[in-house]
Amino acid sequence: MNFDEILRLIGGFGKFQKILYVWICVPQIFLAFHMLVSIFTGAVPPHVCQTGKSSANSQLFFNLSLQYTSDGQPDLSCKTPENRSSIVAFGDGHPTERCQGGWEYSKEIFESTIVTEWDLVCDRASLNNIGSSFYMFGLLVGAIVFGTLADKYGRRIIILISLSIQAVFGCAAAFAPNFYVYTALRFIVGTSISGVIMNAFVLGTEWTGPKERMLAGLLTDYFFGFGYIILAGVAYLVRDWRKLQLAISMPGFIFIFYIWVLPRSARWLMANGREEEAWDLIRKAAEINGNPLTKDMDVSKTCNSEEKPEEKKKHSFIDLVRTPKMRKRSLIIFYLWFANVLVYYGLSLNISSFGMNIYLTQMIFGLVEMPARTIILFTINRSRKFSQIAFLAVGGVACLLTVFIPSGMKDQTLIKTALAMTGKFGITASLSIIYVYSAEVFPTVIRQNGIGIGSMCARTGGVLAPMLYFLKSFSPHVPMLLCGLCPLLGSVLTLLLPDTANKALPDTIEDVEG
Image (cartoon, rainbow, N blue to C red; front, side, top):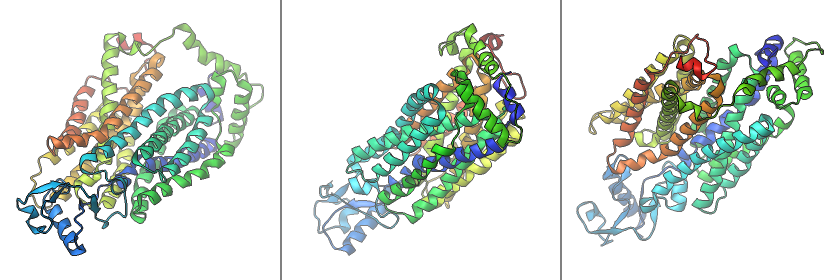
């Protein structure tokens, strides 16, 4: 008897599992806060060089700066007139010099951001995006470190440690004395985010029956979407970046009660030879589900039956690319992970570039997550392959169309935002599908290796996403052009993959190679 058969006896998604998913899903809201808060804490308000003039002249200076803009970036915000008495002539070929006395920032939308606090504009503007990439790099490091530690010490303890790190270092970031300390603290928060996301997903999966796993997994995605929407409201109410950082971090301390309510993984306990502890948990789960089991069940069979396949032959990540068909599948799946996350965060972290109200745009982008994650419930069981192709194409085409909108067109901002929203819809749905699809494309003997490397490719896409907007120096259209072409290439490559819906999963590499 294996563990899935025990789950069928005690209930694959009974009261025990539903309570477990409450504990798993609630932290997802706060994960969304930390993932996306830089949209507001790192926002760049309109700014001009300090002139030492009156407030009336200062306002005129703001207006002049905003008059000469290109895709939201003031062309004259890094210069000041050599003759300070002739501000009006500034926009008409008057000699200028580099800003020497600091900047004045508009407080119309934000009271303060890390940009206004540490002058991350002009020559230092690149630091803002580098900081976001460094945070994303923290997710990559966290996936490696906490993934390894969870396999050794268990899912539950790593989730508890990660939640603690997230709360403590999230609050500490609000008191950072300079940008470099702030970035280092955010990096540590990023590592903890991976520790929670990965291990909460695995803990839920290991306690859930095979038939219910896909639906249960999507529940966590919905709560991430709720966090996406709620953040817009929190940021609207709290316009100071330090207070906002505290507002999203301090509630993390309430998860201290998880010490008493979050269960361990019985499957992990069995795999590590701790059968008695596993059996105690199984009996407790069975009682909560209303399906109590007899005490004389031989739990050791579970452990033995699950270890046998591993004893036959050991496999490594090299097997992912050793044979022709497996190599083709692996490289395509790795690219799909990379492209999906690159575009998802490329759009999510740069909503200010679309020109609409930043809070409204954030809320709309969050709302789009809900139908995107819901619609796949009706398509994915018909065809994993063509669902992936269709949603990648929708996301890619919508992003690509934004490039061709004339700059002087009426309602340009509204049309660009609507297209970006459609692109976000397609990419969100595609990202949800790739979780399921990639697990079914890889054979059992190297499935964990395949998903692990796919996750690393996804994190690499996340690291590069904030860097996309450095490419605006070549052309303002380059970021959205890449956000359009990457999914379209992925859509074409998916044609080379098999459809796995309603089919037996491959167990060995020989099954794949035929």
